[in-house]
Structures are given as C-alpha cells and as structure tokens.
Image (cartoon, rainbow, N blue to C red; front, side, top):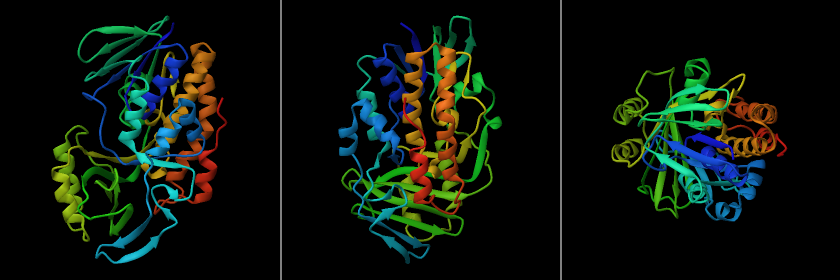
Length: 366
C-alpha cells in the first residue's frame, strides 16, 4: 500500500485524504495548528465541485448547511444605501442558483469527520525539510524525527512550506493583487436577518453577513495597498495594521473594529495569486492555494481545492507517480487558469455571471 503525507488539514487536504483513503492509500495529514482551524469567510461550492462533494457522499449534508441569504445592500461611508438586490449577492451570485455557499469551518468539519477514523492526523506539527529519494521522500518534522513517504502533497495554503522547500521561495510565484483582507467573527451586533451588507468608503470596504441562523456575523474588512512587510503569525500586529488603515472609515466600521479586538479567531492576508509552471516535482505535488491560489476575489478557491483533490487522488489511484502527476497537471491547468481569471477581469467588483458559469464547469471529471 502506498503511503501519502498531506500537509494541511484545510478543505483541500481533508478532501484529498478522503479520496486517497477510499482508493486504498495509507494517509497521514500534518497540520501546524493545534486543531482544525476555525473561522474564515463563507465559501462557495460551484459547478463541477458540487459533483465532487456528491462523490464524497457529503452532498446532502453540505446543502443542508448552506447559507440562507435573502439579499444584500450596498452602502457608502455615511451608511446611505446605494444599491440593493433580492435576487443575488456578491458573495455567492444568484440566490436561485444550485451552487452552495456555506461557512468554511462547517465544510472542514464535515470533511474531517469523514476521514478521522481511518486517516492519521498529526496536529501541532509541520514539515521542516524534504529530501527526495529514489523510493520516496524523507520528511523531517518541527517536533523532531523523520519519516519516509511515497508521495508528499502540499495543501498548506498561500504561504505553503512544502512549496518553499520543494520549489523555492514564495516571491517567485506570488502575484500581489493590490488589496488586503481581514476576516473575523463577531456577535450579530447589527441585528442582520439573513441579509448581507457591503460598504465602500474610499480605498477601504468590506462586507458583513450573518451565519449559523443569524447567531453571529462574519466580518470582512479590506483596503487597497501595495505589498506590506509584516509577520504572518503575529495576529496583534496584523490587527493594528487593519485598525490603522480603516481608522477614518465611516458607517459601522468603528464598531466592527472594536469587535475585531476580541475576536476569537482572525485571518489577515494580501490578495495574491500563485502562478507556477508546474505543481509537481519528483514525488511532491501541490494542491489548492499552495499551487494555484486564485485569491478570494475569484470566489473559486474552495472549488479549485475540491476538484484538485479529486483529480489528484483519482490519477494516483490509476497510475504510477510520474504518470499521475502529469495527468493531474494536464487536467487541472485549463480549469485553474479560467478560475484565476475571475479575480482579474473586473478589479472593482465581482466577475460577470457569464464568466463564472464558464469557469466553474471548465473541466470534465475523470
């Protein structure tokens, strides 16, 4: 039985673990966090990615957890409503679409529960070194020791350690899109009832929407900026950056910034894309944001991770490593390019419905 190490217990990593285990592989997932990461924004499962979820056997559960938005409003810095719609929302598109929007941590929890009984999860650890051998990959870990695996997959996000160790520094592959984004939960202090609020005030903006039966909000705050130098693990410093950049914003922003101070989890990062000529080398492959981040501006990061997990697992089940990686690259490349383009075709707003429809189905599943 071939054994595979997956770095990252996010959407792509847990989905890949599930498909690989069903194909007869022994799977280990290593995750730097002490447990499943909480928080994050609502994510979309669109087009062919819904077929992937159905093949996981999770279609009914995923659809039961979908958000139930009734519509959205767009306001300016003074709180004046500029636009409203009861037909579509910016985050997920038309409300009558078969596509599914749900909270990220709900999806990760479902995927984890589908795999935790027969997949080895190692939390609070990370990969520090990779050595490609003829028969496998020797992996060293931050908490000590080493193990050898037949295949290593980096599903460890935008700042992938596997990509850095196997392919080179992040600067070679990252493309800054001119914006930064912060995401955190808050009590439903605005009393929203399945309604999204989007705001724009100069170079800052964001969105607020309720989740979990309106019990809490997910807050997204953003600002335009060239690349900033900061520690990706220093949450206090990141909150200070956000507070400083949005200090003059109007509407409910001061109230939301106050909630940010005590938020139980917090995400902050640049809007970037990862572009690479190849996502595989030897016995190492990249999956999802680690290899082909499209950025949250595309709305397709989750679908790319799910489809990539299915394609990679399927090809590994059919071929030897070299052939499987070649087939993975060939199948995924047009799909990735189509979906990355969604983030750049309209920098001032969401991509057109026509572009999204083309991109979300721009692959035939094996």
